[in-house]
Image (tube, rainbow, N blue to C red):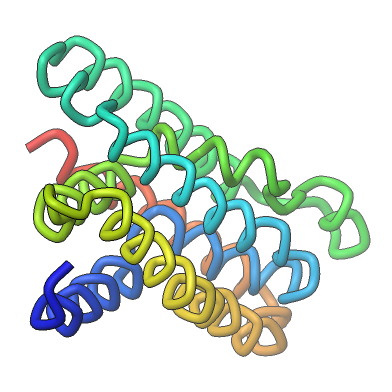
Length: 198
C-alpha cells in the first residue's frame, strides 16, 4: 500500500464505520437497554466478524459473489430477515421494568460475528475497501494493513454508538421513553436495509 493511500483509507474507514448502519443502530439500542459492560461481547463480535469477512473477501469470496448474483440475493434476503427479526424484537412492548432484562438480551459475541455475513453494509464496505486499497503487488501486506486499521479504528467508533445509548439510558427510563426509543431504533434499522435493495 502506498503511503499516500493511508490518509484516504483512514477517512474511508472513519466514514464507513462511524456512520449509521445496522451494527451501530443495534449497538446504540444495546447501550440504552443493557449498558456498556453487557454490550462488550456484541462490540467484539462485530469487530472479529468483520475481520473474518474481510479476509474471506480478500481471498476471493467477493469475486465469487459477483460471478453468482443469486448468492448475493440470498445474502440480502437473509440479512433482511435478520434485521426484520431484530426490529420486531426492539419494537415490542415489554413487561414491567423488572422483567426487561430477562426478556430482551444483548447479542452474544457469536451472534454479532455471524451477523456480519448477512450485513449488507459490512459487505459493501469490505468489498469496496479491498478493491480500492489492496495493492496487487503487495496484496497480503496491504490487506493486513487494512485489517489492522479497520480493527483499531472500529472498536472506538462502534463503542461510541454504544456509549451514546448508555448516555441516554437514565433519561429513557422515565415513562414510555425507552419503548419509543426502541421503536424508533427499529424503524431506523429497517430503513438501513433500503440501500441494499437499490
